[in-house]
Image (cartoon, rainbow, N blue to C red; front, side, top):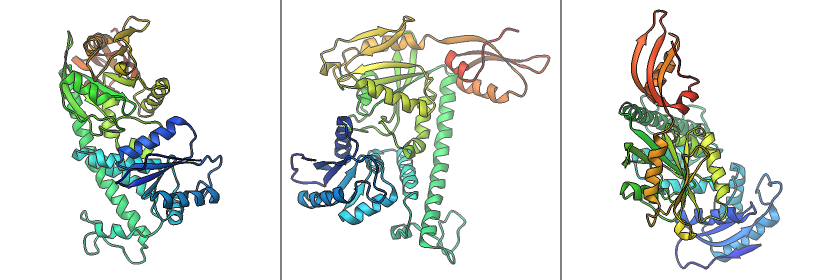
Length: 427
């Protein structure tokens, strides 16, 4: 079964192949295509219980797709599943057209969205990791990246040695590039750790915006911080992390971080490449989980975001659910409290500003709770925990006991103490 979209007049036309049969997946592939600057012209449904090892869709469906590609003059074919390198090459050869899987399409979008040096590094790392698994023959376009005159040291990628195949040379070059990018990102990660330590010593709370892509995180960020971060009604409109100071009632100054949006089945290459950015989420004092209240099955998206948070080690960070876009569903702005009496959900519209003052009050209430103060006793061999407490909490004083034990007076969030497996002690 195939469905035509309104035929666009200009631009790269995309034929969409939906293997997964559900409305959300079909809509998501279409939105991803538009976010990549493509113009969807035709959707083909190709359900398949067992993927064909060579073409995924099988010979009969492949012939149908081939004819439709010519009929609608498509310049690219998009699949909503992950294709193996063999399947991708076979499809491109048969269709005489460029073929992208879901991961490849998301990488294309990320490449378009990256604006900072760090963002470009993270996207290139994801692309290199994705490319490495697809190097099965000589890729002559990589020859232009080589340097030097036969030497392999001194930072040069070198040239192929005696008996080295084109494939081996290309794999070596990609590995070298991945190593260099990781070294640069390690420096970025170190700088972020230093910034977090500085904020911790100054007792400044950090709040991270998380949520499904296009839930309205950047619009909310701009609303509460009076900022001008790029926000658009498209997937992955924001890629690079942004930090702004935020003044909260009673609490005072806090740092709000806008991060990349999540999506279900987030490709592992992207998670690995963006770990420097995602560490900000893991180390935040509070997560603002922004939900598109106008989306019919928003509960499913909440679950999908929670799964991603758990996979990156942020599952234990406290959350405040933000139900955004109430202007689209005629819902009133309000705060829902959890059984302990603390704000658990805030309903608002980032676009109109309705409910934003209530959010600021809820943030002050949440950040003012859960902080404990007391003594932590450590043994001399637990220096790593001592360092962690200095990084994560506010160490008020330090003493050394007669037996060599370390006594730290700390002010720290209870969940951070639990994460370290520590508790406040009495002498």
